Image (cartoon, rainbow, N blue to C red; front, side, top):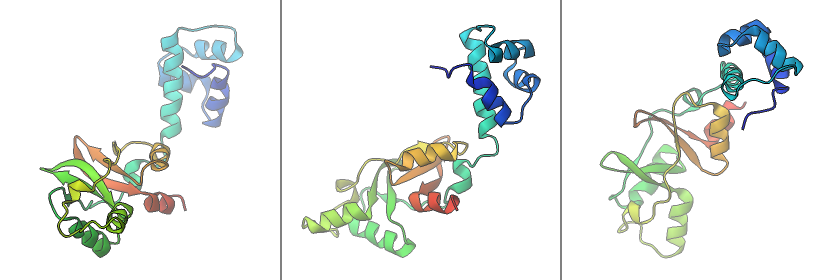
Amino acid sequence: MLPDSRELAARRRQLGLTQAQLAREARVSQSLVAKLESGKADASYSRVKALFDALARLENEGSLKASDVMHRGVKAMRAEQAAVKAARLMKKNALSQLPVVRDGVIVGSVSESILLDAVASGVDLKSTPTEKLMGECFPQVSPGTPFQTVLELLKSHSAVLVSSKGVVKGIVTKADALDASK
């Protein structure tokens, strides 16, 4: 569902655009923009959508992207390795979570809290493969994903992977997001 066309003028002005500039970006006529803003015309869905898509694109230009805040050099744990190795890797690198991979493909995640829960339940981390304890995979986004989208994902996930064409390029954790917000 599209926003109300009455929002058009306010969002356009907030970006400091003229009607002609917005029309050029959306590939519609300036007169259509003027008529929509004044409420004197109704346009087809595709034309109104083109205008709002152009506004969204322009609003996101210059904003932080996932690639701007991601931490490169993602450490990962192999699924078949003992969970104690995950604990050591996290401690050595001051990490609170890791993606878990099998044959180069991400199959889950492991975190300090998962490992602590396992130890509290009497699980022997030395003899238990990481895959027996792992949680859900972290969500993945493209490098150009707006930072605001990453923030929304971090509300329900401890980390977000940044990948391009199936290759993980980086990770954004809650700590990275807080650093970027300073």
